[in-house]
Image (cartoon, rainbow, N blue to C red; front, side):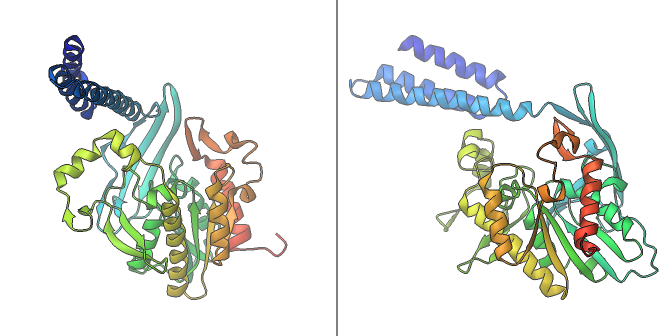
Length: 387
């Protein structure tokens, strides 16, 4: 037992010196303490119990190190260009927003492969640039919500589908892209609740289009590591989303005592805790209900604020995730028009490599953006009878 304790102490010391995962050496140190305590215990019944606890902490330390290594390893891609200097700032409405009146270059690589090499331009209004219009004073607009897909990550300004829709309808309407990388439906609802559409003098929205992916269930629950200050919502007794501060609002224990910031920060560095109880946990049924509620409330607000407008969801399907069918069924039952991606691009499931940037990046390529724009124009914004 003494040799085992000595070995664990050496492991703990090595962990403190070399392990990049801060909680691993802490757990190993606890295991070492328990091992020594077991060796020195006077009661026979205490020795196996402490030895068992020591083994549990060693296992936790190993698992913690594994999770930390996986997180640091990433997906093997690297980013180059001026985007690496920073591209967004904290915002007390949406959590974070792109820098206004800015332009950055972004080059993504996987080894020697260049996945994309593009430019993102943000206008003075904080939205990705849109094409000019042929009308002196456009009478109406089409508003887009979503995440990096709608924003157009991996494609140039004039290749993103909201831009293409706006360019095709330049003599009739303006297209406004309110999406940004990493967003979820909570940013959409916060935008509508806080009058951000009117503040940009958007002319009479006639269509709202939100592209949803199942990962948004995780984001609306505050489980995305990049969205620390995002708007937090909860469902009230009637199932209606109500604003509940931010994801990083002070935490409370049993609804009474505020958890110190240092404790919250420490747990946020504890990968094992995050995996099962924190930001890295799997979304549950309550998170799915929140997602559905937030989308339904967003549609209600959009129609209420802009009478005569329509709200459409383009749902990225094509996988066997059962939540996709639940989302489609519930939103349709709530009177929301749901367009499935496999209806927009029928051969997507059979040949998705044709429409994605790379096996190492699942964002749409310019061809897919073009197909999305064509469908939106033909079936939603400028429908052709029988088209």
